[in-house]
Length: 320
Image (cartoon, rainbow, N blue to C red; front, side, top):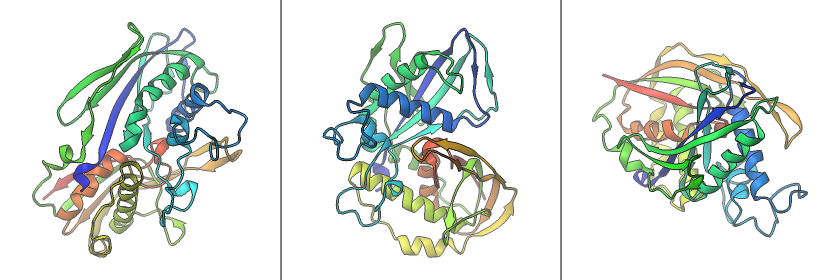
């Protein structure tokens, strides 16, 4: 049933304005914050309301669905606001560049999951607005030049928006789980994972600073099943207890990872919050074949806490 997950990948090309642009080294929090503020500006009709909950338009509002996603009625495992996976992630630029000159282009990626894909036109409008309003602490204005949907497996793309036409087009460029799972290796005995952005996992109520394979497996099982249940109405029929138990047999044979500290300011909670996590390369050895589908879907939907900011982005290679 992992074949049925739907993922939309969208690249937003911004043209830097005359004032240039300054972004922090890790810009995931900046991009997500600007996106959320812009989406609320263009959709919210009751801006003085402290939250979307109980708003008469909550069930049809793009901002409410994407940013203040509530647990489904009757949900047993998703009991709080923070338990619900948002149907999107922002992917930060990882090249370490912080200063952009006038006329330069920069690409921002947003991935939408399941029903979240239906709100793509609102996402494009939000990026038009955030570019005009400005990015970064100094709110330097930009211009949304293009919005492009792409399919990494088929190696195709389709233009959703162009500043020349100023028109949002409907496209059908959505990646399914079956697209990425069809060519997995038949056998895996060694897997090397590169945690590209801080991975925040908890075990026994505490953040994990040294990632064992069972930590990652448990996180991916929870995140992927929750995304599919809440945003696609699909309950995964997986051997959760068996997978979790067998993941404990996987050995960590090389660990070059480290802890990377990050902070962000939360407007909702009016405080600075820690977002540090594990980055770097880790190698695992064992009977890994059955875990490849989780790793493959996970590399597109990310893992761990605070994934909407682009945390928990990873890539992997199979070595036999």
